[in-house]
Length: 118
Length: 114
Image (cartoon, rainbow over all chains, first blue to last red; front, side, top):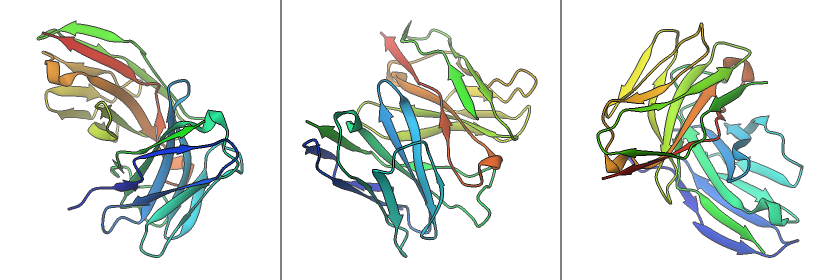
């Protein structure tokens, strides 16, 4: 079974630009979550999508957005990039279910996209 | 809101030493608890989990017990190996969140020297 695939693995962008990151979840998984990892703030939840609907969003500015397609693939977009957006962006997929929570649910993570803003 | 506090390290141990990484949490609901491990240049891998009080998660010689009375989920291993060198994250998922999301601790970097 293929794992979670994130593309690209590395990106270098200039301040003010925008960027789109992609995540293909494990086949059959309907929930996709995104996290930002930085040395200072650690791992922070960005948002979760289930069946093309955003169910929850973390405490990030509106420059961070995402979407999920009917095949469960997800993209996140960051507009007007700032130096502080430099981070490792991780995507996680899980089986998920309507109603949001199954105690035994395991999240499978991709290798991440390393974004550097210069 | 929910939070996870873990010792940040770094922790340096000799091979075959005993490992403990402390983790405590606060949550509004009755959370599930996890330990994830991150090797250099990689994403996170689930190491072990526990979903209710007194459950013990175990994997690859690592263990952690869900202690509701002390809101803790400490990670232990009796004899570490060089290959255990990585960053370890304690995390929780809270049913009150309405969606599947994880709240992580800051991570503990473990280095095991021969």
